[in-house]
Amino acid sequence: MKSKKNKLQVGKFKEKTLKFDEKKVQAAIKLLLEAFGEDLNREGLRHTPERVAEFYKETLSGNSVKSLKFINTYHTTEEHEGIVLIKDVSFYSLCEHHLLPFFGKIHIAYKTQNDKVIGVSKLVRIVEVFANRLQLQERFTKQIANVVMRSINPCGAMVIVEAEHLCMTMRGVKKFGSKIITSAVRGVFLKDAKIRAETMMLLRS
Image (cartoon, rainbow, N blue to C red):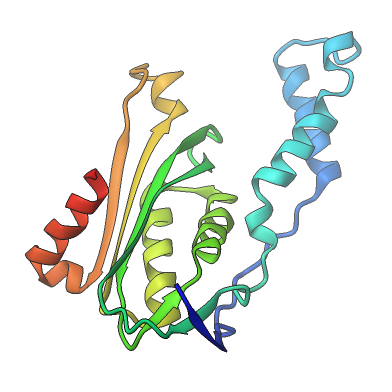
């Protein structure tokens, strides 16, 4: 897909940042292990607090993103007014209810307007930013759809998330392989059944 040189910088997105305190996380993990009745000096646990803190620092890195200025939008020269779909983008996130992972795939579709599009790599980056936080799947789905709408003002957008939650497979009902599917539908995708059906057909292809 060719594009003109002029990029439309999206600088209006301001995200609230959260400070990650690695030392406090290490101290908390030590307390947790002690509460389990574990010996912090045994070989396997000696450096566990540091390892776990490093894991959370990486997994929650989306909290440190100050803005979404990295989203570059383009005016394509192809006069494309159809559906743009990126599907099967994998992600991992942490559910804020039990601090257990949920993971799966996200599909993002939008119908262009005025030949404005978002680079594919930028869409993937948007997914990473919002996935790397304590999340709820429903909120995560809406956030992606809202950013797409605000970035390029398309005719509409549709986001579908399919995820497996370890809080369902490791505890509680313990149903391995169960998935939760959420969607966020905006604009023409909400109003036009034909466009929704076309998008679902593309997803299944």
